[in-house]
Length: 278
Image (cartoon, rainbow, N blue to C red; front, side):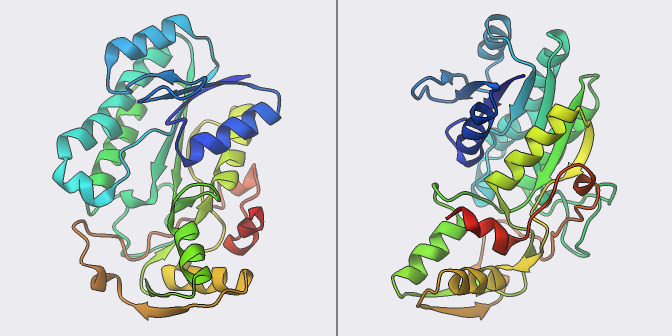
């Protein structure tokens, strides 16, 4: 099996490279800028994508590249649309033409967070432009006839990149005081967890839409306390409300996802267990 992974220098791309190569599969990485052995490909550029598909062989395209700055998406709506939605349409059509399969990484932000514990067939209602463009990407993919997987994930983190988990760990390690929302519920997901789900589903050819997150929903405040206890850290965590942060883009209050469907094929681990990668 050979995989092409967009956003190869990002959190998921780094993890996928190690996991794919460790299992003896082929890996082709593409990113906006060429780094090392990766190819410089802009996923919004049709000619560059066509050249990639014509000159490079692979079985699965893992579309992890995205414009994920939620607040910036409100100010750069056109760019968010191009990266998160239009690129999916371009890649899906090329996959269909060249007989490749496509795995799209999507988000829990397609939901409004009014209910929580969303199943795959729950009604979507994004609150901000980021979630809207990711949902449009899903819809564009479904309208094509390419064989595909859509994975909705949440609060993706790795031990090597800057993210919520590494930030909390660093702040508390330095004895600092931080404020975390106790009314924003998510299902934090390590790149190892998501990467394992991708490899399992693609190798089994399990097509369709799946929630792909860690198994345990937590507030941001609860996540911080788990990190603090797990690593015996100092510092202080003060509970607050998500409204205290004055974000430019609205966040869903409870975007937790039901992972019972994907758990039939691959194990989803708790947030605390996923921290064992450190």
